Length: 401
Image (tube, rainbow, N blue to C red; front, side, top):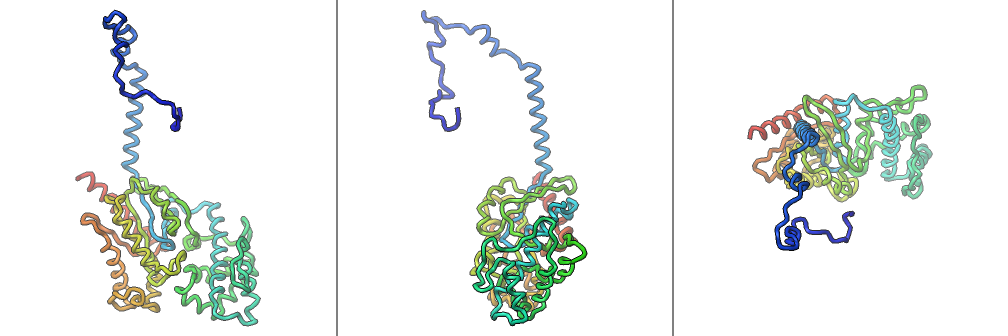
């Protein structure tokens, strides 16, 4: 019967009826030879073999689990989680497959085109006649009505598989990037959705839109490519004698309800927060500050009942952008209790580290903090080596205790 069957079933532990043990004259019945054999029989050779096989499988599974490390990448959107996952492929899995590179190539085109469209929608004044055609063409290609500035669903230009970047579009983008009004919007990027990878990709426009050499993404291109994560992605790799399973989940608020599916048997949580986001708004909520969102989220993760015995490793990411931003955007304007020099990188990073670590309410849990630039492969290789050491040391301590 299925789980939903309504047919009544007999209780599992009902005592036997007295009528079953006595004959019609009141004399107790003796068990039959078959019944007696059932009580006294020894396991057959086949049953012993099956039992030993199951025991062996259980021991092997136990050994496998002892060598397996499950890590979660958690943090708000745009903190760099997916970039760390890409770095694990570069460092441990020989990079990216041709189909993955083709997918990233098409996404880079959308980054380059969409980034400029976002800037053009933020222009305070209509373009001069000399730029009007370029502005109108790029907005249309980006799926935006150049009169109303409203997005037209499904109208954005996308590349087909193996289709080259159109050189004429590249020429228009070069002219727009050199336009002072565009650069003004880029400089005040905190006021709008200006992708952080734009200066990098726009410095490589001739390579991307070359008429003679088809563009194929480099590792650095892939690391800087932005793509919203939805659902749960898993990457598996080996380091030393351990098998690592690293899970990346979407950081936007709408994605967080999926996180709990990954919370069981976690060895370590790698929590990423963009330290450069102290003056940035959330993409999904322009009224919320990125850093405040990261602090709120870290509080709930660090003190969660799921992670009482789990190592928490904090990555304060995007320090390269942070170093530049503090020179032009005062921290005190967003965090009035900051008492250091607004341009002092060391004081500023220690302030944000303290804001995170003091949220930890456990006396026995230590927060391991790293300052990272997720697109720097050499730095991430060193940082992850220290992460693996922390995990191995914690595992050894648990065995000793």
